[in-house]
Length: 308
Image (cartoon, rainbow, N blue to C red; front, side):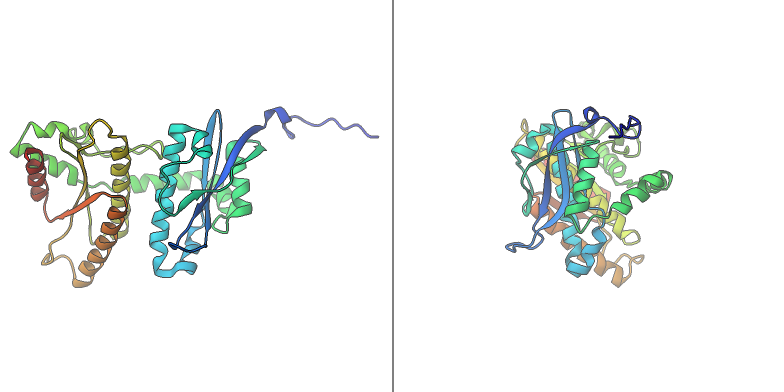
């Protein structure tokens, strides 16, 4: 028998492996249907967690056509809800799931061993999900500079509406202005999030919690994405807001007037369509979505709400 001495750098010792529990993240895209999609894999142990999500969601367009947008939104919310729960409860979030969105569930919890929590999650996603492409992971790891450049470019898109609303509120009631996020008061841009479970709230008053966003005709897709993120932030804040259970959580959106000469009829029709979809999503999250034409109207609404 030949004895072979293995290079420990090439073949990690078994003691270097991690042991964890994992569960597939399942989504029922059609209410009442037996159809299920594997949109993620959650892995956790006593020292940490990793959530690997489907990365080939463009394939949803072939399956659901015009309905793909709502499925994509459900996947986004499911990811944020799970990251939030895993960050708060760790492995208990797998063993005793709670607070999951409608249509989202965790599958059977199983045990696994691997080089890392990330590797365990990626290996199982490659096996279980038709919405996951391992090659895309390799490409992303090989081109980190490109990914960072895209992220930095996205960060440059800044909505000035919160600062404009603060100015309007300050002119009416300076005492209320203290409830705005310090970042807004300092005129700083929204900071880049370091974790998916972080939330940012623009205004937290005595009777009202609010975020502000602009629905623009020229950059409609990024604007809709920003609004969806601000909705999610409000949902998380409301769940954490046990001490002030009676406060209203509202997302206030500035939209162009119907007679705005810089917006074509087609653009305005697209705006109305997107707003209707956002309103439906806000209803599903049990949040209030309001539209205004000017920062002045928003400022007046805030002052009136706090004085009520």
